[in-house]
Amino acid sequence: MNDRPHVSVVGAGAWGTALGIVLAGRGHEVRVWSFEADVASSINKERRNPYLPGVELPEGLISTTDLGSAVSKAQLVVSATPSQFVREVMHHARQYMSAESFLVSASKGIELGTNLRMEDVLTETLSGVLSQPLSVLSGPSFAAEVAVGVPTTVVVASRDEAVASRVREFFQGPSFRIYTNTDVIGVELGGALKNIVALAAGVTGGLGMGHNTTAAVITRGLAEITRLGLAVGADQATFYGLAGVGDLVLTCNASLSRNRTVGYRLGQGESLEEILSDMKAVAEGVKTTEAAYELAAEHQVEMPITEQMYAVVHQGRNPSEAVRALMNRDPKSEEWS
Image (tube, rainbow, N blue to C red):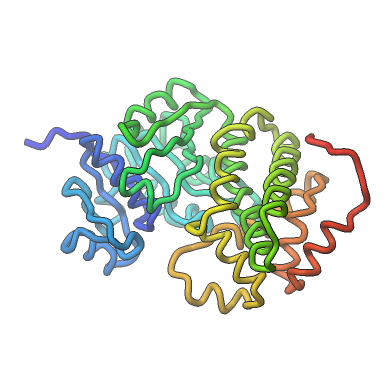
């Protein structure tokens, strides 16, 4: 009789599958829900996922296109679909979920139209279903490296510290270290907004600018993320940690970053349509830029990098002009909050 804990990952992209590998390594029976039948078939028959080329999947991880089968009776449910699909997918999942399940959001983004973080989206969608507060997982963690056991540290945040600690027990292993936090707002915003700054870092790289420019983008990007975070109730210290500066440094510097890659190609002169048409995986920063731009306006928070990336991505502004606009802003003292 199989008495291993049953856990579910909703989303069979690179990130969801990498988390599934971590969970399987902890001895859990992992069911990964896939929207794409060919991906589920590849996982089950070939032990491969096309979103994670070259990675052999453990036997403890299986995939299904049946959402009910994936989440029913799961002790832990990980929501890992792209942020713009979370509401729809989890609305369908709610009828199958157990009230005792621990829910973890691993999607990094802000919902378009509502400007809601994933905590708020999931709280609305699953109202009356779960008895435990949800958690969010974020931090510097490329899926391709997590999947092959590269030592990685992330943060799990919940408004109930005991819940965050319990979720940590599901995941933590020799190559996947987890810190806990109670600042859900800060952890989510750090994970979502760093993708916008990564777009900007990519743009400057594509324009042929150097390390000085990247350092400036990261530092001033962190400043504006912090400003917005404080305006909506986050703890400033969170942005100095894994979900803040840690994720920024990773995403703004590495070639594995999808968002940096999009920015780089924009800086090279390609159109957004061209770039997205040949990308299999989702670059969350493209849509998060729009939501963050609106959220900043709503709270009257100055976010110049976000404003310029919104202009480049959604209004067709020339990337060189965007960088010039940032450099020609009125001189001021350095402000952090």
